[in-house]
Length: 206
Image (cartoon, rainbow, N blue to C red; front, side, top):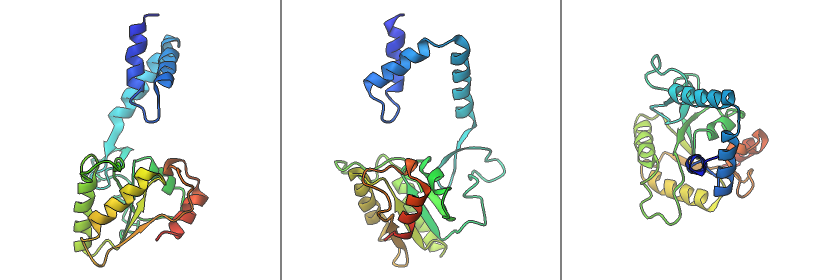
């Protein structure tokens, strides 16, 4: 087997979150040793997933589905029965799936990353400016009452919490900004949180 093929695949897998060089090479060798039918199915699945993926114009969540009849909104943002007075701000789109297993019935916003402790410009690299714009608009229309910050319990997650508070606090004196309580253990990712722990964190938010 030619090593160039392994190297090219490994470099692609290295871009996956949490994947190191050794794991990336294991994935590459696995793909290259599978039957042609499996590899073709995988390739088609990747293309199909990418083709049908859309980004919600309001919450910036990546989802699968049509936006033609909803003005560019996902099924959550276009649902008029959801509570419009609260927004949960999460790091990534898949974090929203965890909240869908709880009783929370409000809206969401995807920051699309965390703000590293060493980063001086707290606006750069995330959807922070778009969050500011949305919160400013929704509070001016007397719709939004609470922003719930829901980031992982890690150093960068806690730094992001503080930074976003600093950005949102001047917008309105009537806006309540809370964070998830300690129902989640230190280092926990929301993506893997069980519903009971997430429910406890929501109830204990402060």
